Length: 472
Image (cartoon, rainbow, N blue to C red; front, side, top):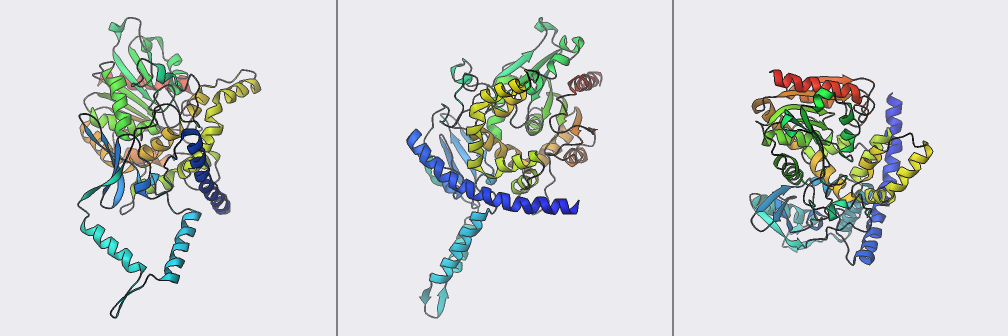
């Protein structure tokens, strides 16, 4: 086991070093292509935070020397959004280390020495001077001078332009999320509501194609089932001017589901990334939550003195080549331009991939998972990954504490024993924060098959959870 781990890390070092170089070259490639195809060079996160991209009427702001927040300006509001520092600081890549080495050699060769009497000041002195200045102003908030103009909502040249992916542009509710509802014909018979929130690179089809057909007739006659495509996924809006922050995701859910259907109380069933949004909703609407069902919640206990977002990123996206799901998560997390290339090759051709899959399986394979996995944009998935899964890591402790103390509802946690992406320990960590929660580990299931393949059993388990919430 020790040798296998060593081999995985050794091979990973060489593979990811090559990917560092590839992403560096792709940065210049895309800037050139963007210039010729869109008449402008789009900023990216390869550079220092002030140059990192912020789109629309947003201003990057600095607090305590870190460019980690964005102010959004509208006609009557000023929004203060937090963006994850992992977007522009994803750890030392091979090229980053080499560039630092070059700078240090330059500094050594030229010294930048300034003779002031008998005192010699070097480059290091200038750096310490900057740190002192920064420290003396740590209570101030400074605005970056660049305000980036509002970008078009139309898909970029590297995004998919098919009628499915762009259906929101022609929809009468193009400012609302796509919502799939299953309810009794007589709406007066609706006893309660259940909101389903999917995970990363997924869609409402994860629920509607699995659970919705398998609920009992009794449940179908009592509950309104509401499955939502999150911002940037499926048939929901995929705006290029969004940074896909926690606030944006929550406001879209509140507007498209809670307000639209006038929900006073509801159950929540959430998977992976959706668990973070579910907990945030529970904090904002504590009296409305009747039960929380969390599947594979990505909750990592962050050691003291460690930057939470960076720690969680390294836990979720370890630079290892095995297992394949882990490798895929690492590539999408660490490499902005490689991720965009994957989108250009796979996402833009999702109809072809779906056709080939059906052809090879003689039309026996249902391809709804391909819809969720490929119908999004790189801009949306990259920002959601960093701003929600990584960037919200520091908030989860306070969310769980609030749910424990102020949200009176049943809490059930399900996790696949063979989940290679989110370890089972994450669910037990949630349990340690929420003692009343029940943890169910399905030994032979993974991150996806915790639902897919056992939908009938899971549908029964959910119905029992909802029944208990009514009896208490």
